[in-house]
Length: 485
Image 1: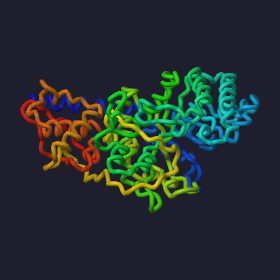
Image 2: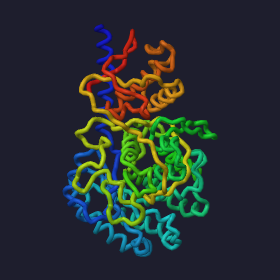
Image 3: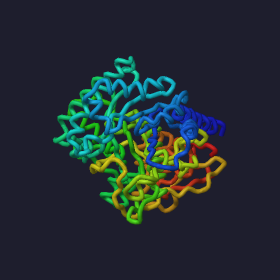
Image 4: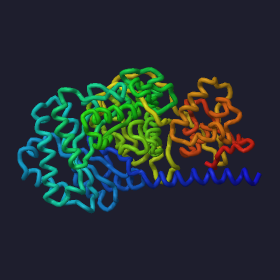
């Protein structure tokens, strides 16, 4: 018995150390701060809110001086933007670029930790040929102005693209840019490559679900257990839409010869409500997508084509923007309310426990090209992916519900082990290999994922096929890790 307790304590200690390591290294989590609203809290309050979270970076769509000042001395990385309307002047007049840098960067840096300047937003799919042609010269002039201010190596310059720059994204390995954009993109990518700046993209699985509103597609988009989709070229099994979309971009970059250009996800999110015909927009789905996405990023499992690291990802959005035109969902992406309370909890607060989520396997999925920034498509009713029960305050284990089929158990097993946990104990020769049944192996893997993901009720959901128990399922030398929650 002493040996059993010792082994359990050791496994728990490893899980705890992993959680601590993850919580201290989340530079890959950012958030978008849009200002098309008339009810936003003062910048100073927003800065305090951001400091109370694990968010390390905030993206502004412009260069609001009040917000840039409010973020001074917080250490939070700041992305600022030059408006589309400034592109012609930036492209044609180097002095205008210098003036822009003086006013919007040098006036605040380094107290305000400006890390990236976006010149324009989704210009390449704007159909404004004049603006598209001037984008690269504008980017270059901003870079030159930074260089003259001796900030060229400290602050990057880039632009943001919608997923519509891709001609093909399914399967991910066949990702390619639209032929009509290739020449202009080649110039921008050469700039990215030469300066070490990122290629920024706006993937929204929400829109992909809108074009294919089946329950299995919803699970695929929300990082929920699902059969997965196999890339016919690589035989890689994708289990979530986010990884599939990002890998499609990676494939497109590689095909153009830019394997070293880093990808940054400038926007991604899910609306928590919408109009009557936008039934995929719900609190349950928004919480599942954003919570599971954060968990996936924190796991550092990466994507199949970029394993072992997390792509820098900016969630959309910090607050709702109540003055945005369009469908109802356009005004319902906010993770926080203007009164600074949470719209729903996805584990961003520093005071909350580790990752709020899992439902994210290591290998992802094909992806229909979907529009990038919020402009929702009608979707069909979605099953509620999360149904948390009260969080226990004693040792608990996550186990399959009684009566599950072997097929469902196998799905949960594949999902859990695909999430990056150590499943060696249920491999031949492992302490938990016997009995060699899918039920036994699934139970061990589901519990291990629950324990390492944060031990929140939603971490033991598995599409409502799992439950928490206070009865220790360990047996013989097979130790199920546990921790009080």
